Length: 299
Image 1 (tube, rainbow, N blue to C red):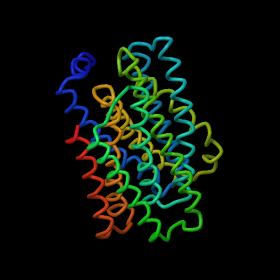
Image 2: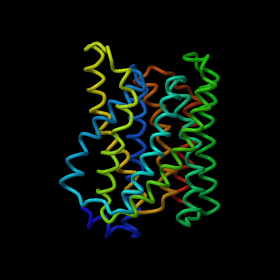
Image 3: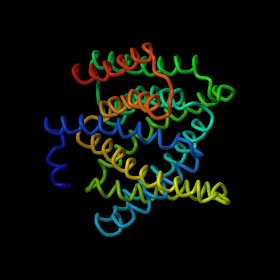
Image 4: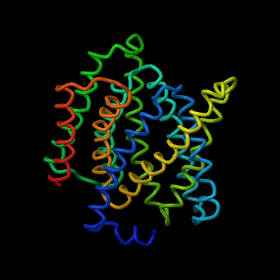
């Protein structure tokens, strides 16, 4: 598998593969966000997911992939710290605001900063048409968040601080996207980076939230652990897909295409979380998708 990935890097086939992986990551990330925001405490949902994917990844890291080089260990340590801040900010946002408001703000601020990060770190350049697509996508996402903000009634009294945390979360999404792309490109074997990342990343949230687990009844604990297993599988494929996309092709394009997850998140909010989707929101979702398409065709 590693040899196949290496052979695709920088090729037309690699570009198509990266496109498909970024779109897959978008769908899976929307599902992942809904799993964390569902009926359980978002702190405990995240901790259950992290613990499960850490335990799932440990055998892979120890026995199935090459060990990290000293340089990669340092990169993994940096990724661990960045993701701690990201997860704390995300949990605080989800704790205070409705999913269909918080999630679009988080994802809407991320692609713009990610494109700039890809320019500064990897020397990637977007055409004027692609920049137009980025602006369309960001405008659609933030427009969706504004519409939801005006109409949502759930958690209204805490919505403003939720939005602040959502913007900060978006900045860290851009930071970890570019930093982790650097990390997976620095690894001789991309699966070494992924296996050890998930193993290490699964430690913090279960430890940090240990007090919240005390006294949980079995009626809550069992469903929460089931959500953790499902979320772990989704997280592996979602994060793994976007990281492989950034290794195969441009980081900026992959980051922008992943943010079509907002469209899928709106559908999940409507179909599963019983949150309304009207014609205006549908129009904004079309704008988001059109922006993503423009980023790809204007390259």
